[in-house]
Image (tube, rainbow, N blue to C red):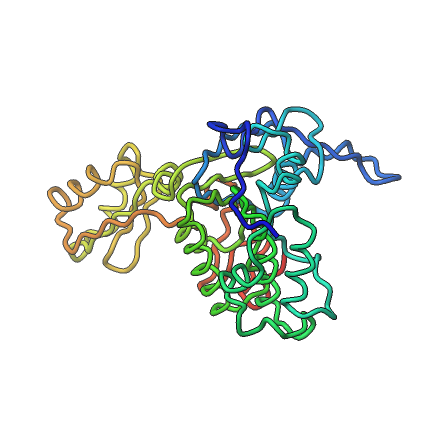
Length: 339
């Protein structure tokens, strides 16, 4: 079987993904008085070759529906989707794009190697079976039946299958859902190594720390629209500015809080014992006021976290307890997280 790399003929210079005015609606359930559901509501997005992009948003935001259209699994109601300058289905058939989804696609009675070999036989050109097994970290499990593999190991197997056509674009939809912390770390270590080859990676995840650590760029979706697009630092700055805190002289906290609340650009002021914590767009101005005019000490300036930005920009302002993953509509511990 031929094992030479696949070239994308006729797509030179094209963006990896280009979405223009993308809309997807669904008819209401039978006997329902509701109007049609507008899952995707006019998305314009360009992803260049070699980018690593996290696609974030609460449940029902339109993430998976958008990725389905990128993969050619469903057609837009209106607007266009292109992958390397082609219709998505053409790009998939040509081996230029692969996906790692949450469920399905595995035969439980086959071994890991048999599964990879069987899927490889469906491609005209493929990466060697043993190579993708090694790259996916499955060499020690190659002779294990799929039914005996853990959820994380099965996700690694799906990753191996996605690597077979040596795709230029890899789409991951909640790739670590159901994995424990160690399995998720190992999966992303493998993904980092693979992305280092220049492959374009687009992934949807509910684990914000994954997006923070792995993505070059974050696209935040809410209500079927893009509400923010940029680096992690840009998303944080746009959503929440910075938090400035200082210890105030005895008896001056209440007076300081009142003064700070009247400053332009201050969004929130909180008392924490002898310290005041200020969220503001102009952290320098607040710092000068705290130190030079109000007599504050032990000044600290912190950029807002991605979690806070997520909640601000998507309109979900409920606090997330420590150690949990944000799922938009619910907040669950990692062990409870399901799609």
